[in-house]
Length: 123
Image (cartoon, rainbow, N blue to C red; front, side):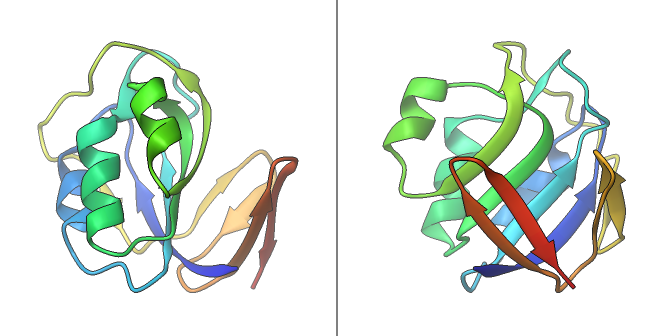
């Protein structure tokens, strides 16, 4: 169980990188990447930074890369899939905005429960 921080980003991870460099305090970062499978927003460097700053996990409605390295991190990660292509770094995205994907609303401060079968959100 952890509270959610929410980002709305589509193919660009500059804001994501900034966010995970802040103290996570056991929270989960929810990232709306538009369901894109074209680029990975999270790799071993971003995930490692999130872990080092105390984030409990990351939920990304998009892709990750460096899957073997991510498996070794004590950080919960949920994603649609993997793609070796890195994200852009233009700085696009919004922080602390509600996002909806797969019919689920994620709002900043919501409680998330996760296991191997999925995620439950309680507002």
